[in-house]
Image (cartoon, rainbow, N blue to C red):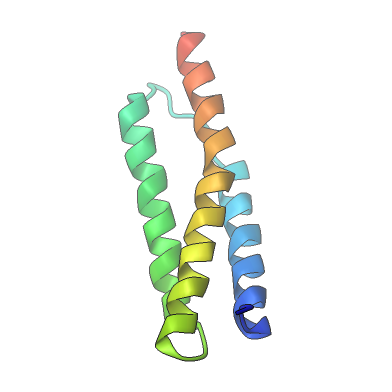
Length: 92
């Protein structure tokens, strides 16, 4: 069963906003450990999931599927950022 259009739109908006957040990041000086950055990004994903949870529409099952898709997409978006941070740490 396909997601409701309203939820698809929310997922798209969440992905765009999350991508803006990632692109605005400046690596800290002094740097934090890679594990701490992973934790921070996981916290950002959780924040977005909790924020959009209140806005999802449809039955509970539909909302949960939409949130799972959003979480998956945010994790995909965060992977290159974390790889870039890991490469940054190796240059130090």
